[in-house]
Amino acid sequence: EAAAKAGSITGAETWFCTLTSEICFSNEAIEYVAVIDACAKGGDPERACAWLERMPFGQLQPGLTAYTAVTSAFATDGNSEKAMVWFQKMHTAAVTPNAIAYNVV
Image (cartoon, rainbow, N blue to C red):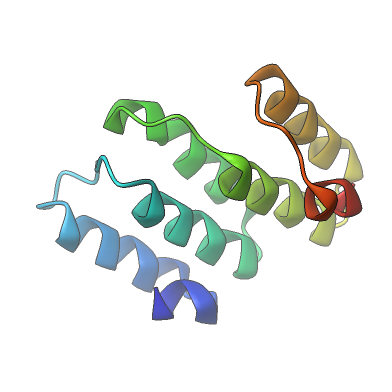
């Protein structure tokens, strides 16, 4: 989680794969969200998307925190169009946005 907070994408991905026995899939949402957050903070929204899209392979459905991190990553990167696409995906997935998610877009 320290790597995620620092925006170290490689560090977060390495941590994730180590925790999940090198197969890079897990059934713990917090592990995915930590990597998604690191990608967002590290300025790589496309990579954040890729991690969010991997969650179902770990038998998880992305939640509010994961969708908000991806939406925020695109907004911070100046790509408001993609931020809105991910905001809409949040709605489509029946994830109810909170005030933070609305403020991102």
